Each structure stands twice: as structure tokens, then as C-alpha cells.
Image 1 (cartoon, rainbow, N blue to C red):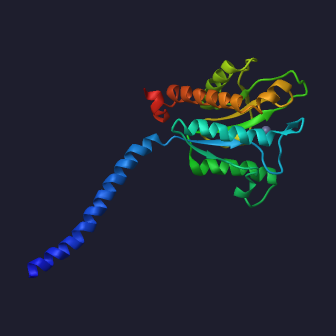
Image 2: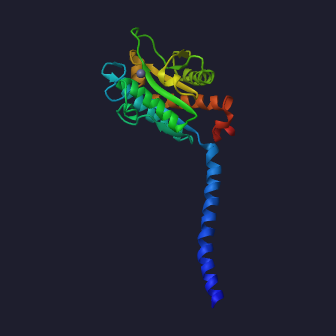
Image 3: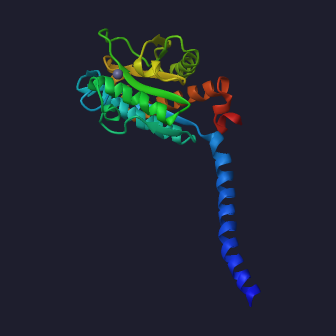
Length: 238
Ligand SMILES: [Zn+2]
């Protein structure tokens, strides 16, 4: 009788322990399988809320940026990237930084703060260009002056974008708050000139934006294979 009692207690204790061990083993395997594949990208649709960015003929940059951000997100997620967006609707990002300085400054700081929290492998900021000479057109990829990996990423993405656009452009360096304050390969893509009628038409065309998003992803994949083999995708490994 006592033996039976001990056996019941043992079962009562052993079963949860065994279950916990099984759960830990499965969880461990999942983690081991998932962690190396954690390829998070932060997409940053520029401006938002009261900050419309540049504009022409009633078209606002902030709306183009957001639409492109969503399309790029879909394309990347379809290729097993994990995407975090700095904004998913028509609002700015200043609420991430409630204290001090101007709304504009807090907005930029908020974007950078999010990158610090998420620790992505890449940061891609989406913008639209404007120039007083309306003949200027084409997508241009910018990177932070002096950041070598970002330059390589910019060149890889520019190369792919040039394959689909009539006017071939070259990467440009500059000094951008969101790029300067992120310590990972980061680019700012001006997807076209809102001041150019043809570009303006293309940036409202979902089919073309999808082609651009695919080009951006192809550039990113090429960069990861060349420069960051540990971050490259399963697709790139084949
Ligand atoms: Zn902008």
C-alpha cells in the first residue's frame, strides 16, 4: 500500500518534470533553429503626421514613403525576413521620445531609438526627392559619409535599382541624423523625384513600387552574401 502511494507521488512529481524537460528540449531546439535565422530589418517610412515631407501636385512624400514601406515589408516578409517599421500609419515617431527638444528632433530620435531596441541587421529609410529642375529623376541611395559597410549596401541596392530604371544613378554620401546615429549598415533611399512627372507617376504605381521593393531586396541579399555571410538568408545559401 505504501509502495503504491510512493508510486503515485512519484508519478505526480515525475510527470510534470518530464513534461517540463520535453518542453524545454523542444523550446531549445526551436531557439537553436531560429536564432541564427533572425534577420530583422527596420524599414523607416520618412516623415508622417503633421510632417508631410516634400510635395508636388497634391502628392505628399509622407504618403508615398508609407505605401512603399508597406510594399517593401511584404516583399521582405515573403522572403523570411522579419520586419519592424518605425511607423505603420500616418503619424510621426516623436511619441517614442516624449521629453525635450522640438517635435522634428524627437521624431528623428524616435526612429534611431527604435533601431537601438530592435537591433536589426539593416536599417532602410524610405524618402522621396525633390529638385527645382523637373527633368531630374531616378531613385538614389544615400549612405552616411565614412561608413564603409553602408556604402557597400548602398552600392548593391543602387545597382539593382538601376536595372529597372531608365536613368541610371550613382550612390551619394551625406550626413543624415538617422544614418549617423545607427551603428549597423544603413541606407536612405530616395525612390524618385516627386518634382518629375514620370517619377511622380511611377511612385503612385503599385506594380512599379513592387519592382523597386524587389530590387531593394535583391541588393540587400547581394550585400549580405558578400559582406555579412552570417546574416545571409537561406535563399542566399543555396
Ligand atoms: Zn524626406
